[in-house]
Image: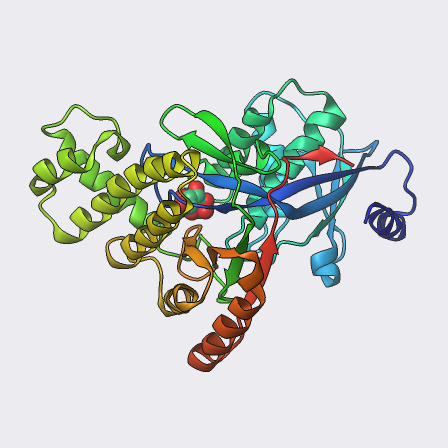
Length: 387
Ligand code: GLA
């Protein structure tokens, strides 16, 4: 891989002098969905698939960006002084947003760069290809300019650029999972204060299988921001009586006793999901520690039901995949993952059943939806690195 990337870099930028090769993973969330902007817990892990980059400093102030995934777009150039200018719908807004965000945080990028990117995370699949580019770019800047930032800072800068530069009001989960990823472990993160623990993932021979609906989605054009404001409105109503900072502070019982304060059925359902999903995530991590994989799987299924019925972010494609997945032999659990509205589902499947699982679910999906789903058997990998 490294050689292929360097060869391409030479082709595009003339030579490989001063060039270094980097990688940042994608992520999948095992449980804890739409809880990260509600002060709740999440349980994601980094993947061994992700984004590669070859980068080197320039002498002038040009940022020259090329992607092997969008080769026809060629090299896009901008200068550091006009970094604020965005091009609609261009992937380059992610790396540009990071350079901009470093500047805003007091880390001035004062030289240009040539960067070539190559990602093997399917675009728009909900496995965080954009957060992967963001954390990777931050990691490159840290390395090339010697900025004193931790990997956790890279996550926060990534989220800041996504919120402020790219206009998506996302939580911290994706960038955190990528920047802090650890091989064979998931990250049990409390988004209320960013305290976290690594939980070794021992699936007793079972595999993590990701099911891609191939229904394209982007957070920007989804109802993501709408769900977020519904939760904020529900919280504000609860705060008229309760001394809480987020929905993540409530137990199920406290929520049930006070939900009438919200006074709107839809917002009650949204808040219910946030509260129950947070509690489910805590229970799921405990189940894993107790080696109770069966309970972990049941909680994944309950998570999907709640995302379908109360949070209403699944849709026929994700529901079909999960419904069919749960009918198969050797399935421990399955649920949608990420923002929803398309994208991917995640399942845990006994190893000797994986092939039949993929065949059967794929067949029904094609028949019902009219186009094919994709399946990836994934491994949990490390955070960003220099190769
Ligand atoms: C997207 C966002 C995350 C998180 C998930 C839903 O992936 O980027 O911050 O809110 O959706 O859990």
